[in-house]
Image (cartoon, rainbow, N blue to C red; front, side, top):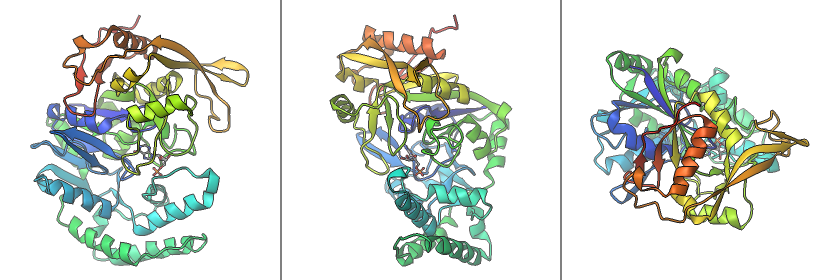
Length: 428
Ligand code: IMP
């Protein structure tokens, strides 16, 4: 059985957590492959809202295996907070979750380095979530990092001290004050608790499950436009958020990837700094933010809002090999009489329909087409057959322009507000 992948096509916050939770009954294994507690995957059911940061979004279903893969970076303190919240809901963690020994650890000093580096950048800051993601991946690629499996070794403390001391030397170069004592003591306590979890060589587990015919869903974090290689560099995260990241972050061979679900909002948002060609600064953007409750699940920061960006989505579909599209937050656009779709950009006096290399330094002016909106409240719809004709026209338009079928339309945050769809789209 091949491994299916679900990932974001924009700048994150597309609603991955909710959709993974909805799809989980069809799968045996849900596996996170990159990122860490910079993610905030929100799930709602039975009137309760849950935000997961590192733990895969299949955790609320019994008889499923949730894998925290080798490509993930783990902050033991944040992780333990998630565990405590889940245990309070009677989720049996060890029955449902395994952690890769090869996943890297976020040290307290990684978080400090993240904060110091952002502070030093001043106006040029990335807008990092300050969870220590960048410095941890830097230590991974710089071959200095500590991995979860290392906590089982006798000289763990020694190796921790050596890395910490490197970090302290780096921190001394910044004008940045900190007190490590409390955070470090808590971190060490949490590390001890990790010894009670199921630590595994997850690449073997994943491939054994695959060979046994089990269905596996790889759950992405952040989004394609935040990918370290293909995102709006340097305003990106530090991991590969794309389909290829599922291969390296879980140990799945490229020829063992099956469906690729690409998830996007019916409009577009971004949190943190960096280019956003279709951003709406004024009243329209504010209305979108309010209607979509666009505030970061991890940091609480207001998200920047704008119209859907087709050249960027086309790029994301290409890079990821998307086979099915999932559109979320269609209900939010009920707010608008007309909907704008960016189909191209004006760039250096020319009209182009692709993202140029220097997205950051360049002035990209979006070229819009305007479509009719729908004013109906979609949040109570029970089936795709009930959607307004103008929403149907929006779906048809996007399928045609993105050359990919849309098979799920989400019309609210709850599990139940999900409309499954048999697409009739075919390549012309
Ligand atoms: P970092 O990954 O915390 O270093 O943040 C780098 C950039 O990615 C910042 O602009 C963040 O706001 C953004 N980012 C990181 N994780 C997420 C996410 O899960 N959703 C949306 N944006 C994110």
